[in-house]
Image 1 (tube, one colour):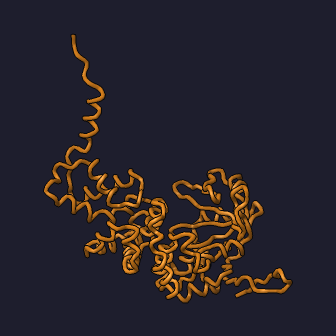
Image 2 (cartoon, one colour; image 1 turned 30 degrees about the horizontal axis):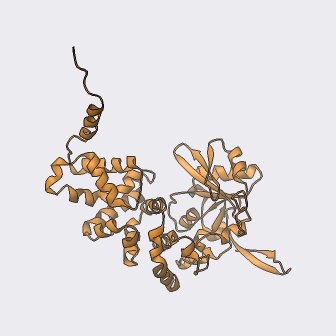
Image 3 (cartoon, one colour; image 1 turned 90 degrees about the horizontal axis):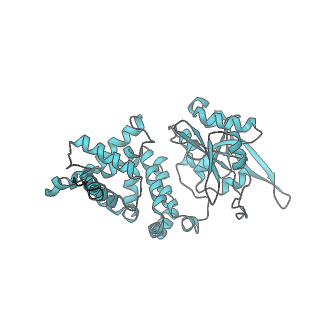
Length: 365
């Protein structure tokens, strides 16, 4: 292990980061997505720094296959956009770039600063500042593909070895700034097969109700990420035990009381781990959440009069506050129908009737 030093404002030399070599972290380049390596190499050839960051580094250290590879650089979004033809700048509060390769999308962000956002709505800084802006230490590890080193400013490498989720942002503000971090903290504790510090659990219980005010799109994004992990069953169980699931997904909380819910979810997790299901197929990720509900409503006596439109409305109501795309919900519903041999009354009958009302037949004279 190497140590990186810097001079502080008072002129004193202090340690700012620990650097771990390949012999210590054991990450092989062939375990890293080739397109993520290509993006890093191209940024470096253009004169910029580039690192793989966050969950990908964490998962590689745990000998797991990362679901996403995010990249961070000192290049600004406009500069990144010029380097990669198939890319687009997104975001309002903080701009970043999506680089597209076929169906794969890679998020490339610029180092963030600890200072306030400037008039152009950005706050770019150094790698050290960027590290201390992240939420938990195990997500603030930077992997350099060229030197094959991990740079650690916050002690995340050692925390991962200890299997502990430790916040970077002060406890007093971490969940007030962004309540979704409560879900992330619980998710990460399951992923690393560890636990949450006692003081962090106390803060989670204190600020749990803040999750009710979170936007549906944020909650939807986080639940989809949970379904991609391959350990969704354990994460939902832990969310339930800590009283979080009933706050953010009340209908799914009631559904998970049925033992078969977790049996199906365990099978789903195995399919994700084995690569049988695509992590990019949102409809497949939704299926285990709604299957028991659909089977329940079709055990009712009035199932023969249901149309696809009515089923869709029922499922969307069940998933609230989640708001996944209608097309993905419809595809998930159809797959469940096919798997369980469920048949509907003409699913287009309502639409056809509406068309006839708008376009009456011409009278012959």
